[in-house]
Image (cartoon, helix red, strand yellow):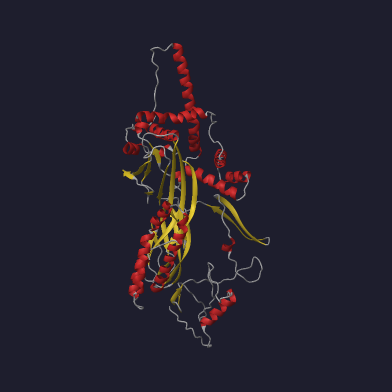
Length: 576
């Protein structure tokens, strides 16, 4: 049932004064007279319930109380029990979440032990698994009586997806179960609530995270939110000033900052002319504002660059035929794919830079945009056109005009022959450098798919034919070896790392370990413990240190230089 406790007690004292005195005594005050209740558990006030009955039973409880800011509801209650001490100390609470404990980087079984002064407090077996990681939830505050769309950001391993989301809103309602990362809920009363999100993936692994949701009156929420959003926009504009113009444009586009600023100004005008007690109008305004989200600031969460030569399975020969022209045989796709990659290797030096930008929200960090920058230099002038081809990705946009055909976007990179080219594009899709399904290709007719040379019998002696053939065979063997020594890396690398992300993660781990001060042997021991093979470890370390990972490279710069010039010279002759 409902029990009303007046502020004025029979003794003449006020209940609010007694609670305030307890909080000061228990938690202390700062120089401004403020009690710090910012911990995860907040400030706990003990209450004793006495009854003439032999037992007092409580099930679902809540307290509705009045503050200067209005009526609030509290539903967090704890049973106080006594248990034997494992250690003896002066009275006090220990918040271990502030100790900075973290789990190991490597997955597996561990023993967690907590000691104080040599005395063991706890020792438990734990298992570190690659479970779904709940990153953030938006929004972190809302208005009472206003339907609110909540969205959670989750990271899962490759080839794994989330199959269910459970939302416990902490206000006594039945948890909501969804198959997407979004749901809608209305909080009837103002107060602070713990929203617990639990996600389960296709492997049956689950993880949970608790988010504190602040619910206030629509009028107060509108005013506070408008001020915060406008402040965030100003901070973001400052954050991105040092970025390239395209990066600035990408972030503004993903966050839709221009439209957001316009909408906020319109909402502020409606808010300013609303009458003081028009609750219904405030709820309408709050409903329009509640879907607008702007991060506190934008940060760079990844920045790396490397030589770009994609795997052959990233090359779509059908797209090349449709975009650049030429026909091909379906039965020889791998031949055409390898020829396209060989053409790029012989004619272009391509560097790819990858940047990831994320937004810091109240409840966590969310990825915003991934920017890819291609820098292309021709080893010598290329006479024919060649194209950067990218399949359609979420939120894809280029730094220069692009065209579309079928399910691909493409740009002709050779509009000005001989001049270095730079192309940038961004996407909101969750991909990284190792996953990027982009490639560069000329028309199929410009590819070297195989050739044969037969000398004429007229005027050439048997000895001359033999010498020419021998020289030709040596030349071809040299070309084949050089080709193999370059492709050995790709084939061997693919054998060691069928999932290219594994190599990317391995090199990143080695880099982090080096920065932490770990020596060579310590890194190897940790990688062995994480079940990496000796071949993978050696390859990853060589890759990180920039050492040769493939076949012995022939010291033939003159031949290589002539090889690089050969195809382009032929192209120039065709142009004439």
